[in-house]
Length: 277
Image (cartoon, rainbow, N blue to C red):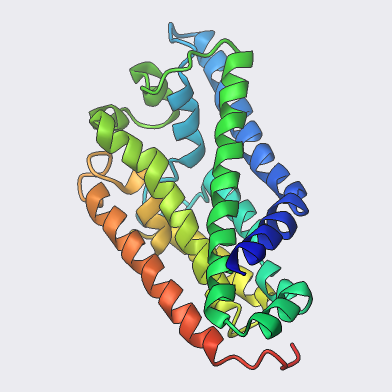
């Protein structure tokens, strides 16, 4: 029965909502055009390379430095990073509850297994997030190929100096991949799961607003409680001397996700599925 639920969620929650994945294409595409245009401008006055795939990917997911109050400097929201994560949350938002009012309700009544239903929705959330990142990854890859940018998984010093920070060059290969590939994905998985959990308490639109504010706050301040920090390469050591450890962030995100999964099931187990929203 759980496989039938999974097939339904993959069909209705991913395939029939595939237009939402266009948002990942847009986020990645405009990020790529941004860094490419900037590189072209720098090449007019400096002798720098075209960069690599990793330069373009870092530009999409790097985030920003924590804001330090200064009368002469204002807080600048990292638009690329905010849009990339927010577009994911838009795709995840409200599917679970809308399904509960339709076919999902019938399945839940007949299967009499709230655990299986909850597992199915978790698997959908994870699958959608993986699809979102995969589409973004492919978009950046295709753009790089079309612009004769080297498909290389190492950043280049001259591009990091001009587009991000040369501190990214201090990462070892393993730590770099964790910081720019794995942690952003784990952070996104956590956010998609906790968004589902919170929607069991309040309306999805309010949950989305809360998540957006949480992301903006994460960009503004460095804190363990502002989970966006844990998936933001700019906040990691050695990019930031007082930054987070990639290993610690990895385990914190895994633990937080597991807690949310259990919390969500306990809440859903007691939920009155006949109640009107």
